Image (cartoon, rainbow, N blue to C red):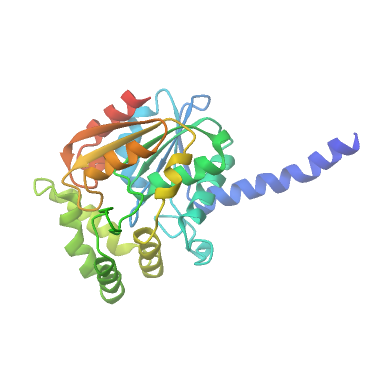
Amino acid sequence: MTQASARTAEHAPAADRAHDDVLRRNAVTILGREAGPVMVFGHGYGTDQTTWRAAADRFVDDHRVVLFDYVGSGRSDLSAYDQRRYDSLDGYADDLIEVIEAVDARDVVFVGHSVSGMIGALASIRRPDLFSQLIMLCPSPRYVNDGDYIGGFDRQDVLDLLAAIEANQPGWAASLAPAVTAREDLPQVTDRVRDLFATTAHEVATHFARVVFFSDVRHRLGDIPVPTTVLQSVGDIICPPHIGAYVQARIPSCDLVQLDSAGHFVHLTDHELVADQIRHAL
């Protein structure tokens, strides 16, 4: 055995262990064709990978589908939550890059809901070799109004939201869920979103909300190196419809699709519509 081969053999187990740690840390689920092109689905604030399952199942026949939970969400390893690492969206972009590396993927189609769209954008800028396409569902590069830019929230709105989570997370979840789902005809979806919001670890719910709602990725949109599709719903109080056009105008290669569906959680209320539009974008 050459010295180079010996070094490779020595380090391979360590690399495998590191990948196993990431798979466990982020509760990674792999579905579909082992040798197929890879699609990775990222969830938004206060939810987990299960919100994507119905739409993702539509791609398992011809893709390798990867679902995961950001640290602090779903079945992830809560002990790995570090406020210093996750004090900006860059920490979550690191998670996404590590998940893709752990499943040994390249040329990934990343589908991100809400803040995951911007997490995917940051990850693709840092590691363009890992991505072939971004599909963003109801994304926003900044939620707080800033001069002529209307993100949908005043700074005081966000401070009040954070105070509500801190004081009474279940009550906050119960009041917000109907507004963000915006579908009185689907109370089961409202109940599901409420329960996800309410059961997120309190430390994560408050800190992640601060990071998300005060994030600003506007200056990075022009650096996104891969073709992007934005799927924008109507009547979304978290990401107002005009944000889709704002994002499209600033990403070098971007298509905008207006969905005939209301609310912020259209992958739960209209998963077939969302899956069809993802398929069309591919």
